[in-house]
Length: 125
Image (cartoon, rainbow, N blue to C red; front, side):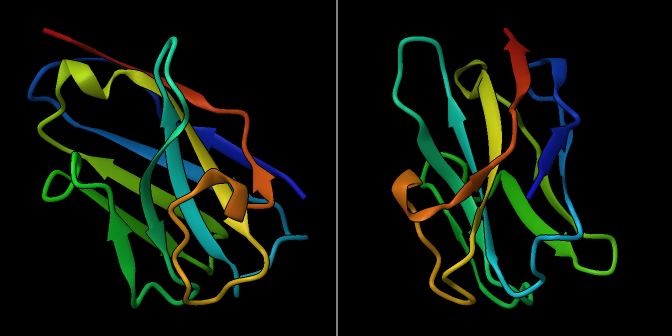
């Protein structure tokens, strides 16, 4: 099982980025997918999650209204559209898959079974 995150980079505060997470064919369309992030010296924290069909989403309070998670199962890809970025959004962003859930949107990292390698997002002030 492979998850490949991409789309990170350097952006000014107020700017936008779109992260992508490509799933290998061994993953299932039926799994809940999530995004987490980890800043230097900090614990990994939940950002967003989406149900298998995209009908349900969950966001951390710090990103609600600015970030949007979506998925295209025909392309085996999950996205995280990030708008109005702030310096405090700077972190390595990870996508993750929960093979045991279709609609239960986990917000804790231990609920997820597979992880991508991470993509760096840096927001300058």
